[in-house]
Length: 255
Image (cartoon, rainbow, N blue to C red; front, side, top):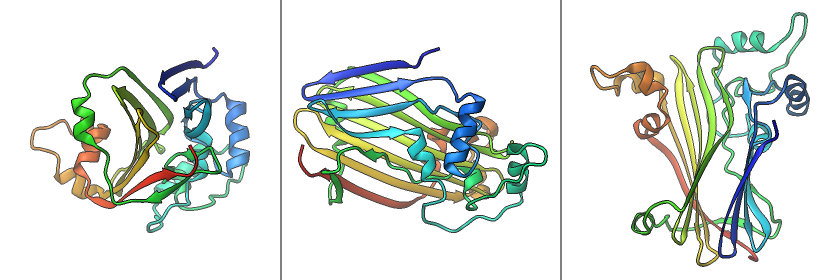
């Protein structure tokens, strides 16, 4: 089945998305060769979102780019016994498989999107996304969501990267979220919000890193609640984790 393409235009801006099936086995093998590690169980390699301004691509989110960032983020390296189980689940009999970094098997990535115009750069600013204006703008004119990848980490948790986009009158809002839950060890959530003033040409990026050990997350589950459901609820996990890092930047250059 061919991937499904959607797009929406507003003034000088255009948003294009593509959604397809998970990679076939030979496609996954090719990606493993390129990455140096096995891709997630459910890798939607053809999925992407691209933002255009005056018909020129300026920014986007792509599965391959997200996975190429695995193991390149900051933070303490994790050495846990589950990694050996993961390696066995990803290799064929008699096949050796080197783990490039301790993060490979958890698919933890600090990917914040890809700038597609070499003249543009994000620069830190003391600002924030105008949440009140967005709420006051009314209901959605357009909404879409897609998954870049998902994996159950050899039944020891999950790693998932998804992207959601909505457009209201005058405003574009994107949320890209990486959730990595390693049962009995740690929970991490990275969120990238992209805001565009559709009546102008201003682009803001709000990046947040959240993290907590697994035991602390369990203690936050209300008495009598469905533990399994909450641990699989990305919104609840995001709201429950303490904020470790927050940065706001603006896309600058020639638009």
